[in-house]
Every structure is written in C-alpha cells, then in structure tokens.
Length: 346
Image 1 (cartoon, rainbow, N blue to C red):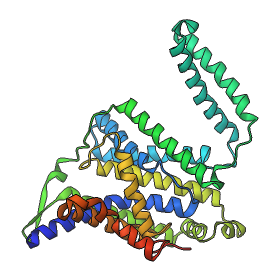
Image 2: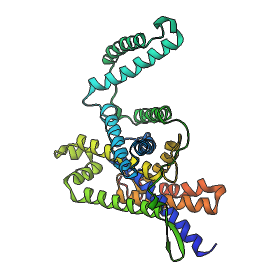
Image 3: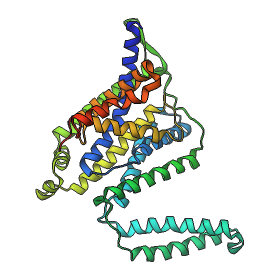
Image 4: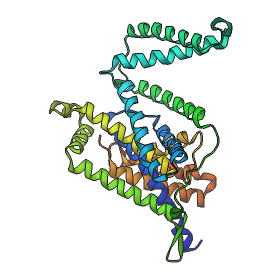
C-alpha cells in the first residue's frame, strides 16, 4: 500500500462524507428542532433520485433536475409535516386524506374479492370508493386522535409507515430496475493532482457540500430565521414564550431537511445508482451522522458525515470482512463517551 492508495481512499471517503452531509444535516435539524424521529427521511433521498431521472428523461437537462427534484420532495415533506406530524390545524384535510386512502383500499378489496358486485367497471369502482370514503370520514371525525408530536412511538410508527408507502409508490411508478443518473460529460473526466487521478464528479460533490454548508451556516448564524431556529433547538418552550413562531420554524426546517435529502439523492445517484431499497440503506448512515455530530448542529453533522464516510471507505478497503463494524465503531464510541453527540445539547 503506497501513498497513492491512502490519498485515493481518503479522497473517496471525503467525497462520500460530502454526500452523507446532505442527507444527515437535514435529519439533524429535524431532530434538533422538531424532536421528531423521521424514519422516512431515506425515502426523500430515493424520491429525489427518481424525480431527477424523470426530469432528465423529459427535458434532457441534468442541471434542471437538481432544483426541480429537491423542491418537489420539499413540498412532499412539507405536506407530510403539516398534515400528519402536527396536531394543530388542518384537521379537516388530514381526516379527508386518511378517509380517502382507506376508501380506496376498501374499493380495491371489494373489487378483488367480489368483482361481480361492482361489475368490474371504473364507474362502479369510483362510486364504491366515494361511498366508503364518506363513511370513513364521518367515522374518523368522531375518533379522538392522540397528537403524534407528543409521542415518540407514534412518530416512529407513522414515519416508518410513510417510508414503506413511499418505497412502494416509487416501485409502482418507476419500476424495480437499477437506474443511473448520468451527469454532464464534463463531470465524467478526471483531474491529476500530484500524480493521482481524482474523478471530477467527486470533486463537484465535495464542492457542492461545502457550498451548501456555508450557506446553511450563514442562514443559521446571520439571519432572524436562523436565530429563531437556534432558539427553538435550545428550548422550544422558552422560544414560544418570547414570541417565536415555532410552528413556522418547524415547517421551514422539515421542508429544508427534505430538500437537502432529495438533493443528495440526485447527486448521489450518479455513482450509487437509484434502485428500490436504497432509502433503507442510506437511512442508518444518516442516523449515524446525527448520533456522532449531535442533534441540531450543522458543524456536528459535517464532522459526523466526514467520520462515517472515511470509516466506511477505509473499512471496506482494509477490512472488508468487518466493514460494518468499522463503519459504526465511531458511533458506538461517541455514544459511550458523550451520548448527546459531539456538539449535541442536553
């Protein structure tokens, strides 16, 4: 193993850590601000890649796919947070959405079990679904629902349910084949630094992560919204007491987290590929980043992502038989020494 080997492995680890920073920083902020265990965060990564593939297919523009996919997934995350992860407001719409979903399931179940009952036509199926939806709406309107934002177990069950729904929806829409996001030809070249060939696309990944990290830091440290976010992370109850609209802050942070995860899906799809199950592969890595860095800390997310990226790359290169151990060993050590993470608060 010469010097070139170590340089290449370190570069690959840093570039992979840059990708993990995009998905981990959003999850860290969601944890820190909202105290929500979002197990569907990996699905935002997956959907970002799939939506980017669709944008590239219809427009031929890779550059356009970056903002379109990220904004689309941010809207999906925002709708999820407003309708299902918050107890106040939009109760009518939330109940209607749940009733519609149950109504469709009832219609599908009856049409599959007793096809002769509805004649097999779309009009009959639609009528049955609408009647079932109305019945379910009136039923659910009379059921007292415990707010999900006050119960961690309900958060886990709800978000993992959404993770499976998103995964199945992606499978139904885009199929189960492995797909690759092809970047522009300029990014397929390599640059030579000290006799070492470094893929230009991975350099782009590092540069993108650094740029986004700087922008996030400026927003969090130099703006009123950033001050409100930091106050909410420190003490949400006190922040509400001094007039900060924590509801608005939570909405902004959840959309931002989904945006960053989807952006990571577009960027990471060029060398990881996009395929069913990628969401659940990336989710544990994102949690490892958050655990190492600490909830709500961008600096912690950056250091955690770098640690996980380097540990994963060097572990697979040097100790492939125990690569999972080397990947999660930093997380175990941090939990043993400082359970709140390197930059987490009690």
